[in-house]
Length: 106
Image (cartoon, rainbow, N blue to C red):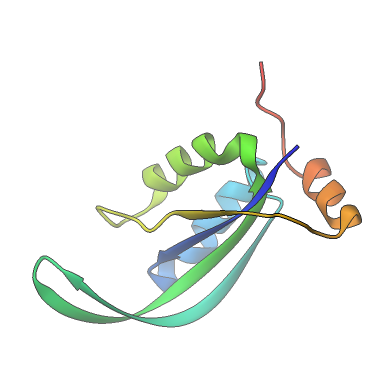
């Protein structure tokens, strides 16, 4: 079984709703919410925004469903959704991820 950490930025006022949705749907075992400042270019303009960074712990098999739900709930036209494979982790913690996410395999 594989695991991933997924990074998503969003407006602060949407962070708890998106994080709660992912945990309630058992697509994520845990979501950390950090306040961050983001500087980026959007539609030719330099932007500086205060956002939330969601750090999502999940199973790799759930990434497709997780991305779908984030896109439905997210207010941005092009949300940041970046997944990084967990190469090694505390076995007890990875088992906890298993216990708190729902397998979607046929």
